[in-house]
Length: 216
Image (cartoon, rainbow, N blue to C red):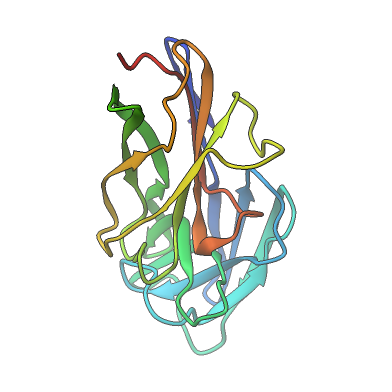
């Protein structure tokens, strides 16, 4: 699957985990590709169908892309479900889960990644309102994990300068919609980008979406 999806003038991208494979009963390897390099990022593995609680093993994933090896004695990766996930540590004990791969009996089952899109735009009373739809992997708790959505001018990922607006995810639902209200109206036909920042870390971006403002 391509990292980028194009529809009209919009572009979507996201951090992902892929090429997850069992090397032997106690060893799993995985590759990852991130939007930005972050010293807070890790790859972890959990028993079960979700990345919840403490991982039984984790490895640094600080670069833009790379491969990690996870070794856990006393577990058998050929027996039962395990979830491999890209996480950001927010130093509160509640990691934000950016992307996952589920494997069962040593075989790939499915992958999930954070997605973001703007599904509604309007100007009203001297302000702009954006309806933003987000989805994160099962097991992520956006509010507890301190996840935020940022809005910037332009279409550059990791844009310089001050954000136009930012908004914390108010719910622990792994997916949903939020409405971002700006202090001033956005400019018609200008380029903007929304970013999903996990763990309240502006150095980590798990998804982004570029768009032209068409609100009336």
